[in-house]
Length: 247
Image (cartoon, rainbow, N blue to C red; front, side):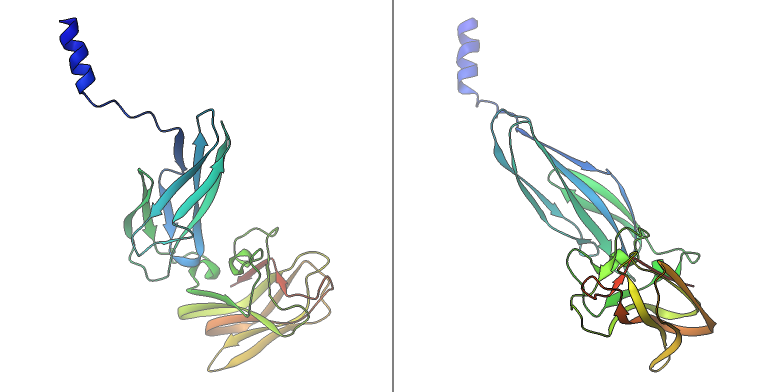
């Protein structure tokens, strides 16, 4: 009997060794709101559980309705090391709400996609967030992420004017713009403009040294608002906006 068992084991294919790379994703489900700057992040973690260094990959895929910052995470892992890579996930305005799924390696991440609530801020409801230019480390959405420690900056040193713009698919009514700039090296001069068959200046700020300045003006229906930047307060003379809110 023991001989038969030994022969059977010899004939069966050997079990594959366990994968030394342990893949995890956080969060395991993702609520997401449509809009150019309403992205959420998935943290893709690759852990080397072996005693030898190695390369590790994780492929990502999603329906065309969702936009992934990257579709491949590839990293060098020393023995016992874990690498965490953030991957931004977004969906453009007008994408049908519903349930979607992102595949990360062998892991499925459910995504619940919804449109911004009618009570959401005008920035959250914007269908377009654009700028004259930007730098990779200071992207456009850094001026609408709710974090004053991050900021958008233009990509042209000592070249004026620049602009930062919010746009909506249907007209909204605006009467206020709050501009927050980095302390000490933010914006000095700018105009607040609304679109009405052409750009119209509704408020101007000159000689600013404050971190946040509020501009109020008579209510105006419009499909777009932009900040036309005219000069900065030193440090390379760039346009820098940490936060822009309109209401």
